[in-house]
Length: 421
Image (cartoon, rainbow, N blue to C red; front, side):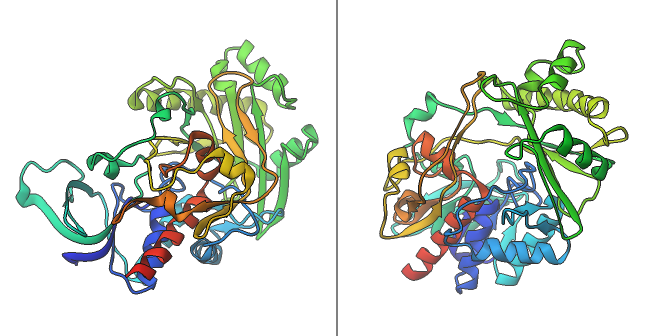
């Protein structure tokens, strides 16, 4: 049963939203999560963004991340890589575990729902929720909720747009290409592991370890000419034979999936045209996936009987509209490792900018940990933003958009709000 009054309403049940909801509910606050999908998890579950990237050993606000890992590991849905990265998650099992965690904490969830209208009161909000995921034509169909705090965890800052808050205008000038990820199954992982680790001896590109009865491996290739890629001759041959297009070869990356001994997840295809519509991006992406699956079967030992077992429900978006908050976090802050009184994230993940043009993508390492302040999540006294649409410039956001940092944002915000209440 959904209540009529909450301390916090969170729009978006992705990783940041789930961390915020769990932490706030555990502190005793009344929490409602509104999610447009029929499941939680956002980028992990809907966009198949696995594994989560490794961040600093000094990271803060990691209780939820550790609890998620623990629960998944108990059902063979998560593993830790030899470098200490705990983010090798199984996306389907993640849906189940997130349900369990939020319900155990006492948070309410509305699936297949969206916020239709928002009325700002003096020190609160009244939100009208459409529970059939469409714009409700009749006010009688709306569920009306009062909340002290409203959190925009939509990824696209949809709530802030509805309320006409200011955005950082540089988003008009800079962008990153999106991905449509997929999974292939029916792979002889042991055979592929033997082949790829012998074929590519660069352990900065191709790696493998065995843990929890899983073979965790990864490899990659891009069309950038300023890097040496062992897989380059295979991709060039496939392009020449028109098995794949040159654009298909612009970015290729694969990872094992925890708990699935015959599957790998693909961080590709990367869809290059930034002006393409979202609908056309899905069509173009699925066409590319079919060609890439043919490439794998023909060129990668162990893939002879492999098949496409899953295509992401949602495009993987690296950057979208970023809201102008109380503090705009900058690349200079990040590079200098600026300290803040109330940090919500500590990380050392590099500035990771994907480009649609050859030889222009950037992975800029940082020399020290950096902090993100709570002020970059504050839009107004009662409105907050978490996830990729935080108040940060383009390059700073490119370092902060990874799943562990988004989870820390959600948990850190919940702790901040619980102290205010």
